[in-house]
Structures are given as C-alpha cells and as structure tokens.
Length: 552
Image (cartoon, rainbow, N blue to C red; front, side, top):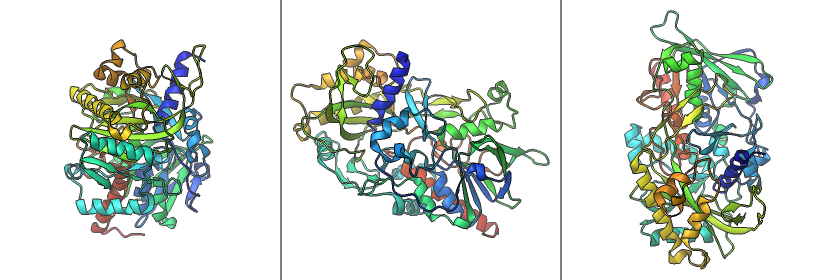
C-alpha cells in the first residue's frame, strides 16, 4: 500500500476520534420505505425531493400532510447498519470505500480529507450529535419568520434532541473555558449565546442516535414514498412553450442499473425540491443543465440556463485541535460543551481512550517505518472551529457521472480574518489546558509545546508541513487544518435561489438545504438544517393553500 493511501486511511481514523457514534434505535415501521429496484418505470407525484438527508426528511414529512411526496435518497437506511450504530466501527465507516457505504470520502483541492453522507438522514446519521440552534442575528439576516422558526425548532426537538449527561472531562473543559474568560456560564441550552454552555445532543440517555430520518415519523404514510439507493441523473426541464425553463420530472437509477422516470402531476404549485447537500445540490443542478455555461459545455452538457453562481461560495469551517493525554480515566463523550467566544471562534471537546501515539503517530495508523510502538492512551481532543468562515471557494464537476464526487476547493484561511480567529481560538485552548480545572487531567511532564508538536506530526490531512508549524500558531492552523463537516454553499440565497429558495430563472424548482447558506449557523448546523426543512415545508403548504390548491 502506498504512503499516500496510508495517510488517507490514517487521517480518516484520526478525524474519527472527533466524531464518535453510539448505538442507533430500532428501525421505525416505515411502510413507505422501499429499495428503488421496486420503483415503477414511471410515477407521478405532487413533490419530488432529491435527497433524504438532514433537510429532506423533515421537508418530506411536512409536505406529506397536504400533498403526495416522493423522496429519492442515493444511500441506504441508517437502521441496522453496524458501522453507523457502533462507535467502535466509526473509523471503518469513514474508511469504507464501498459503493453503498453510508459515507462517501472525498479530498478537497486544499488537501483536506472530508466525507459526504450517503444514507437516509444524511449527516445526522454520521456526526457527533451536537444539537444547537442558530443565533437570533442569523435568523434575522436570513429573513425568516421568527415565530415559525421557533415552532419548527420545537417540532424537530420533540423527536431528536436531548440534554446530555456531562461527566468529568466535559465538566473540566467547561470550567476551564470559564477560567479562560469565555463567560458567562450559560448552563444547558439549545440557544446560541456568547459564553460557555452545554448544548443538546441527538443521542438519548440510553445512547441511541435519533437522526433526521426519525422525523419521518411525522409523515402521512399514504402520501409518502421514499426510495433508497436511487441515484438521480438529472432534473427534466421543459422549454417548449415556456417563457423560461420549468422543472417537470427527474430521471433516477436503481442499484440494478435500471432507469426510472418520476414526474410532477399537472397541478399548480407542484415542484421538484433539491435537498442533496452542499456537494450534491450544485452537482445535480449542473448535471441538469443549470450552471456556468462554459463549464457545462466542457462536459458535453446541454445548457438550459447559464447560471455562473452555481457551485460558487463554497466554504468549510476550518477546525484545528490538540490531543491531550490524561493521567486520569476519562469518559467516552462526544461534543457537549462549547465556548462561544467574542472573537469568532468556538471551542469544543470530545474524550475517550485507546488513542496510541509515538512521536505523534496514532496507533490506528499502520506503521510506515519500523520501530512503531503500540501504546494505549486515554484523553481528549480540544478543538476550535471558526465562525463563518469568510474565505470562500468553488465546486466543479469532475465527470458527468452522478455517483462521482465533484471537485471542491474551500480556500481555507484565504482571508486573514479567518486565520486570526483560528490563532485566537488556539490561544484560548492553551489557556484552558493551563487552567486549574484541567490540572488533574494533565501530565506534568507533557507541556503544551509537546502537544502542538504531536499534532503537527500526525497525518490529519494531505497538506505539506512546515518546520515553523510547531512554533507559529499561524502556521499550525494552516498546516493542521481539518474539517468539522460543516461545509456549505454552492446554491446560495441571492445568487442561485431567491428568499423563497426558488431557483432563479427556473419554474417549479427549489433548493432547500445547507448549500443555500452564506455562513454556517451557530456552532453546529444540523439543528438549523432540520429546522429549515420543516420551516420551508410549512411555507410551501401555506402558499399552496393560499392559491386554492386542495390538499390530499
């Protein structure tokens, strides 16, 4: 196996330590959930949703209360999958390159390893479970109805959000943040507030994961159809007799390679809604002929709408971290505590045991050199993620195969303010490590400088290393940057979609997911992405009723 392959697998293993997963609950009895191989060759629906992820599931559940809904999910079910259910298998989940694995790996052009969800429930079936709302300012800037936003969050929270048990390591980091000046102590809350708080989680007290797929429990079964392993090839757009393109159907492939057509019923207000995520939504628009003209022509795609903003504004909140060995036993914990600073950095932590290092190399990494020592350590990661970010990139097609990842560049730290926030965040982490609250966990003979050197020596990405990274926090941020999976953009409001999430220049087509965000909401976007699915479902049904369209 080549060295780069080693680094790839190992980086995913290291990253997995930040994103542990617990057991999922028993599968709900969804009578509307089917493998796409059972789909008819032709079907008709009021709404067709491309993507059964974090926004697609609540959107479908809501729309089904007044219309017939088809959901096309490219992955499988989260229920009964041991790699999703079991924390011990999480690294294997990331390293799994099988065609039906729940996570699909990709490496950005920046050399940062990443993954996109390929499973019903989307990223909520893979992530660390942290649940926290967007800030009030974010809601106002988005132009959302604040009352409906509140109701939509509460609708989501009744099914999937819980207060976590906060034990030794998490409590110490919380107290260390307060000692470091990240105040006030806001206790447990879903709200985005300056200071230190305990956020929610989508794991219940028994350790069972509740994903966005659980929001389908709200769905009207007789109005809902969900097809799994359904790969959408393109959205069908009519230009004959129309003043501008109109979406009227989609072509999708099942896992046996058979093609199917799903079409909108000829009724006012019926729509196709793309909820395929920040990687998938701009990709499917481009494959359908909506995107930058020359780029589409280069791939032999017929241009139906020259839209140069599709794929622009891609951003990923950079994450940097330190691993802290502990001289005391620590609990296995995911993200629970967060310090929301005034300078635009969020400090979080996770903990556990079984981490092995020698000169900074994780024991999960097969040794590229002789003399590797398998040493088991316990401890935790303390990480910082910057808000925004300000730095933006772009997404392009590599191929016209919808199963292939597009090419994406995030341009981490291109804007100096992002780098400044990272440095300030790392300084705050160092203050936390030097706090009285953390003293009972820290080894006296492992100074912070050693922890920094350990991380610089770890293969957390495919970027080059500089000798100064161990002594310069600026270079440390640049060299050891990782993803926290909060990437967004590509179909942004005001550029690709309007304030009602309708694709500008196309009738009968919307995008509702994180690809529409100009910045990541709060400290973790999943609560807001779920909320947005519910919120827009309500808005669409309200518009349907006001136009006199009868519900089913």
